[in-house]
Length: 138
Image (cartoon, rainbow, N blue to C red; front, side, top):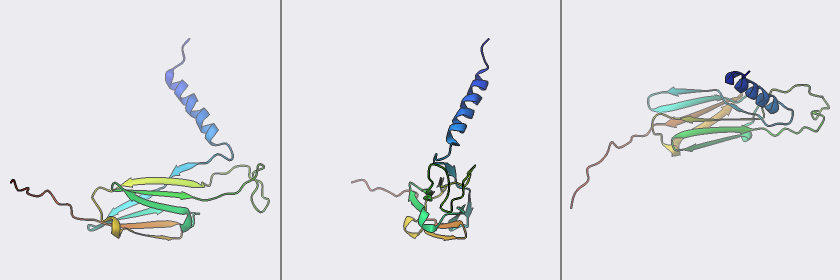
């Protein structure tokens, strides 16, 4: 009797999930963000609790804002922290990332960012785009 292909897929995803949950495996999760349009600029607010500003890398390319945060975490084979506490289960992430494409062109040189109390705020002023120009024919 042939198994339902959806059951096979579900079983495969369950196995993959268990593999990724093993201690010591890096975990990449998405960063929750809000994007506000203030008319003349965009404001991107991202939650990055537990990270220091030095842990965060912010880049802008092709009208997309990329946020990546990595926190170094030292653990030994027994999964104990620096105070000797043994972990049975860990869910707090050490690496997160997110890329947000902005709907309109922005002035890359005027993008500013601030980080306070686990919240990253990025302002990106919009820029005017020429709708085309007339080309003289010689």
